[in-house]
Length: 434
RNA sequence: GCAGGGGUUCCCGAGUGGCCAAAGGGAUCAGACUGUAAAUCUGACGCGCAAGCUUCGGUGGUUCGAAUCCACCCCCCUGCACCA
Image (cartoon, rainbow, N blue to C red):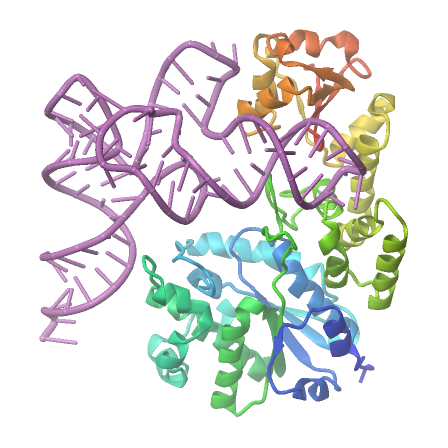
């Protein structure tokens, strides 16, 4: 048997990655041998977002320590909807839509774990495989009988739905826990899986599975939850003005992804290094000390952005993100060559061609159409404050009616390009038509 | 089905005939300050460059004038009843 790293739990603990665990400390002993563990990912969209990164990377940490990870894609549970800590009932997605998402999520999850490393090679499973032909009566007799409604009603995860005025919970969502519990019991049988990990919101579902496995098979299995990622300022982690940060590069470009991490607040960055990177805890502590001693800009954000971007988008994605960032934020953009600009475009810098009739539109309209702002108001505000910069030149509100002058061929970079900056961080590359 | 309570601009949440594009808070955006931070201050925050236009679950009324009043309808919640 491959060697097992017995310091894994201790390392996870030092990283702050352990929220709760079942079994009164017996887990450490259990993990002295190579075990099989799983974590579920429900398809609620065609991509996971960075909220799923902590469990995903934790699976990887377990694999690196010599355990066998199973990534479960919730083809069945995704059809139901997890009510845990959700404020309101959610609408159901159609089976074919969910099935499409399952395929995407399966591929995405697969890039994080190793499927070819001997005995502890990873596996991906879909819980639809053991639920789609399940008979209702069998389900109620074999699974449902082991659950106490009294007990379920008291779960913290559904309490607000049951107690809160103005909200309720359908039987469908209420049953979610039974399905997930069944997964654990099933994987225990099929794969000798003895540990489930998940976000802290999954505690109720996980203990449900631990109990069911014991009742159905007299099996001793464990659960471990990871902390919810929070930010020091109290705002929600993983959102920016342009929305959720996704793992799919088609939804969030490697450049935008890199920028997201680079903008991490000082108060959060060391914690995030422990959560999201494979750097050792001692190494991270050293970075923190060095940043504290040096006045001015800390290095931690740059390290975090590099590490996580590489993890998710690979060396190429990271290189692209760094190229764009360097060009926009530290270089002189007017000095970029035509091929540099073309490269930035390919690397994911938002770009578009000016419409043929742009001369007849207002500047505000052109920028909004290009997606730089949701409406004209922010652009107008920015113009009024000289916060719109075209090829390094500030443009004011008085130029709004003269886009032809702003985008004059004579002032284009390499006869064709304009880099427009809106505010401090929003960039867009325009090309003259033709 | 019956009774009661609700549906307001991204979220929470005021507003109960004109002073309402609609308080306040949150989130977000921009500016100053900075480190592409934080904190703080300033401005914006339905749409429109603007004049102006369109909103307060839906439809139709009353009125000089409605988010606010009336009617009907849709949806949500709570309880009761029905299913037995």
